[in-house]
Picture 1: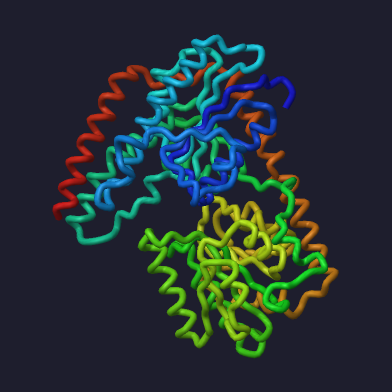
Picture 2 (picture 1 turned 90 degrees about the vertical axis):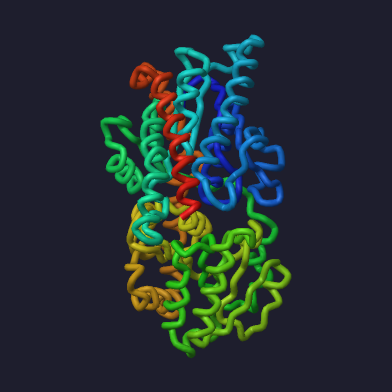
Length: 479
């Protein structure tokens, strides 16, 4: 966008793993870096064996800070408290390094404004606003994926346990909204999320919340593994692949894909395979348990299953396997799956955005998704895919049947081209970069948002709330 000077963009993200939030923030960094801005990504955790390539291969300047004092959790608890404390520890380093860069005489003709982009945890925003370089050109943008307080599990256990959880979460819930309101601009990842954010925190409190859609890199070269369809070898002898990609978490409801696939019947399942691939960490108990539950569900329905952790083992599964589970599939093989699949099954309900359907459309693959949340904004009914009730497996089975046996090549080609065009126009790295620069330009043309006054007093109150939450947490642990 003409008129926006090269800026110093500082991104703060809690954990650079391989989830959707991490992919989004990596793409934010790439979109701005590709437009000439200086981008630095700060995080409290990066495992080079469990992160996206751009976060480890030098494409981006990634700095790990705030990981030496506070652990990620204590005995499997206090995750939100530790996330806040780790981010505040990181923020001390960020303020020191940014201040040092500024004091060393940075050439303002080369790099102008300091733009902070924070996502997931807004705890550091008031501290950046209060103790950061008080410059007319410094702004803070908060990218909200979804309110954290709505992701917390509150209804487990008896009434006493629920009360303890309520007491534990209250200071954090209050602090989330208050700290978010300190930012100069709040953006959300979809219109769906924007509506939820406004309802939870109040539109007056946060101002006009804009939408910046996540993206995929439409200019990225195909990996060697994904080119096997170009006159080369087909996966599993050319079986018709129905693909589900998600983390192995219960809220993703991949069981819907299994039930709908079973509904095709034995004859129509011949020559097909349901592949369930996604993020999996054997240190995360939910991943382990949910994979086992899905395997048991498929087996109980009479479907033959196999589980693979490597590409080699995946390619060698017997022809008789109906459902193949791929745990933490490598990016190159994931691309191959997308290119060769007939249909992507996206099962979560009320997904905040959902990047996987966009990745499928980039590959020209139609999408079958829940008619809720983000897919309502990405998938166009009958044009790039279908939207169906996630509580009606038969409706999903009907779409599978349609695409496997009742659509000709001309219709499939038209849908594929429409999907690719939609991604290029609305969900490309270029589109995201343009929107981000518009939001940054808008922030810079306005005065910095007033921060509710008496910042230091409020910070003390917030810290008192954290101290109270620690007491409540220990009481909760003793119950």
